[in-house]
Image 1 (cartoon, rainbow, N blue to C red):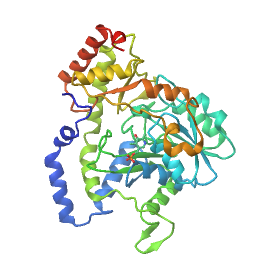
Image 2: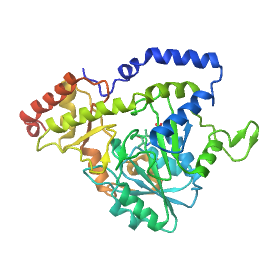
Image 3: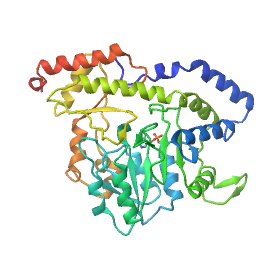
Image 4: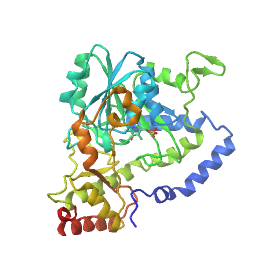
Length: 372
Ligand SMILES: *Cc1c(COP(=O)(O)O)cnc(C)c1O
């Protein structure tokens, strides 16, 4: 059986280091906002080439606190991709602003900059770009529009640790960036975690307060804050895994190259990566009209796949109140019916990816169309 993702295998590589880190934190006795957190923040900022990093509770909180720090709230509009994990939209709604959806290109899956300008109004405060599946969004065009209209660009970099656009790291491409360290991400904790990176001192200072009860000194509260901290243990574990992120991403790239070279069928559309973009290959997403059949047949052959995402945010019940209906965002709706994510993770073996390619070949050559 080839799993879609094997977190046990991924994390077992660091068992000894994790145990040592646990002992160290236990000995220190400081479990929240101690030296492991500040060390991780420095190391991750330096990894992203940003001035600051603030560890927070999770990726959704990272987005939400970034919006709050940018003074975005009720009455404001924020451009979001229609094709994303729903967290991008939820963060906007959570601060009381309105998500304004924009469709993606159907080959890169990322926000189409040509469709942004028409959605900008006097209420638009920001664009949240998502580097979906690990590939940076079309940043030069998006930044150009944002600068012309005087609105902010915020990155949802939850899937893009280590990706870069023209050599500039994800996390350093907008006013601020939100990362998630959810276990399955390229840099995953052993539980929930997140961070914001930025070069903006004001945003940095504000989030440092907001994540910790609006406080910098115990029992003195400057803002209506939250409790959204990255704990010492997770920070300690992430410091260990950060050292291996580039190697892990290199293995992801190897696997992606293999799939791209080996899978060449009329029935399957392969993901397109723009010339300026260096994907972190969080996911390897193919497209096919025969998606359901392919997924089913792969599973019968012991290959697990997943769908990112089966239903776009605008059609979710949570957003029924926005009044969207089927047909409003046809590109995303079509993608949700055709995308299929193949296994791609650092400990996946050559024999396994060869098996996946071989199985697909067998399926296609026996006539996937007929099986439909
Ligand atoms: C995972 C993810 C998030 C949310 O991160 P959590 O840590 O799960 O809250 C946000 N945006 C995107 C695109 C994601 O993939």
